[in-house]
Length: 282
Image (cartoon, rainbow, N blue to C red; front, top):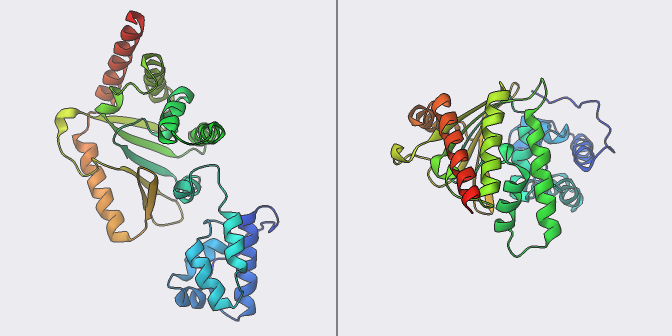
């Protein structure tokens, strides 16, 4: 099925211009989306998502498209412009997809999920990750993280379900004051937002499939589900249906062995009090 163009101004942003140019070149070559997709080893619907600016262009795919459409390096150059992002490049595709998700389910092994971080906590995490980077880069990523958190606001916000490991509540990121603020923010978010659910994986749960990586499962109203996984300085989108189903099954098991939302909230509030006591003693 051909993805029809939306009423999008091709000059509104680099991604829309990339999509308009891809469509123009494809039609000039007399190819359907399916035919072009076949030649560059993807589906026609995938080509359509680039043409209507749903997906961010990929450099490797743009190279193949330039070869097939005999367009020199035109699409590659546009791709580099379209991939500019406020977030880390390896996460940018997933960040875009989050905007369309109706349900986001995350497991985070060692730190508070980005959606739920306070500015002080985000700054401490980002500063540690970018220890040798300029301060303005740290500031840029912290601002982007704060902006990203707004996705959970509003009447059309996605449902957000997170599982975090108990170690997240114990590692003093940013010091006792920052941790007390962060854990109070978690508790308040769970109490005040009906679209947010939070569970804690306790230490005594033992081994589980997601011990070493962040995992985010995204479900959409108009597209198949997919998974984003992340470790230090790298991330990867998983779209193969069989692998996505395997991740979903593993997440369901993790949800089953984690503490209930009510017990998780009690543990979070208890840990917040511990950091408040530590801060007073200091």
